Length: 388
View 1 (cartoon, rainbow, N blue to C red):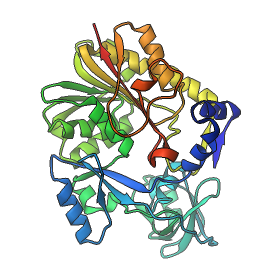
View 2: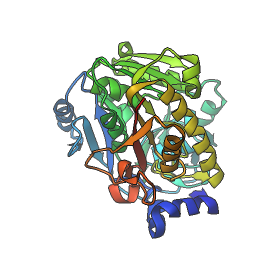
View 3: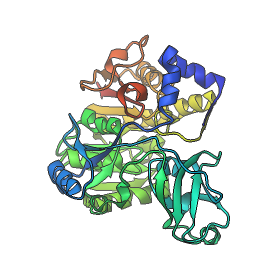
View 4: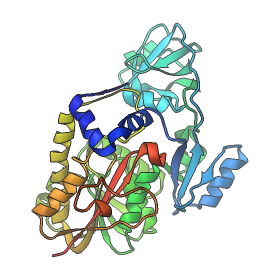
């Protein structure tokens, strides 16, 4: 269930007008396609498709991006309401809703659920997301000091798609789960061999690894993130994809890169800062307020300022978010350009998506993806060049 205050709903109406109800409805369900990116340093799209289809997995090549594959998402299906319940957190619920298994880190509560029992998996607000069979005694997992592994195997979920992280191709580092809209960020950035490319908010590594693959491993990539836990996830993904030698990974607050790393003079920089994630789908349970939007916008511009400092004259910066408000997107970028006279917004030339929200000076230069229109996550991309 979506819990958005009046101020946030007004902000969404600025973007969607009378279509706001369609937008809100769309983010409570997944799109009809679940995308992965093929690791072109290790294999090809055709080989991955052939491997999957040989095992009876329904998979298709994207119409435009050579490295993109998608699995059809089936549903919605009814979930049986059983006496035994497993309660999971928001993040876990949204994955299990799509057919993922129940993993220990997402477990919140379970009573009298023993190995072999079938239970209804519910979000913290009671929304049923799946039926699953316990593979361990659930309460023992809650008492354990370290939580890891599968607690229950999902047998019936509201929506169904392949369990990406359980595919051999995932374990072998041949694919990476990434939304279609997010893949376009690296295409807009267009990293080239020999360039120094910085990913400022890099974890868990979707864009970092895409930059490596797009440049055929020949760009010099530095990935920053402030969270030790997230950096661990980034390193794990680099190792799984066989790309740990293609990037330097440093722990740092990317709002202060120009102070802590003044020697960096990057050819290209990606800024994908923390945001309200209003475009991420599906949402089972989401609490947001307009204050969250305003706070996020103030935070985001700090990353943008620092990233621009470490950019060479003539260098390219791509700013992206997985949210939809103008406060975090058009206004952040346009206000920044007014503040920094060396920054120039340049038009993005891709065939998908639509231009930015009308009424802004550079609306026609931006790209947006809208869930209820493009069957994707909600996304925003802007491209800037440093003139001096």
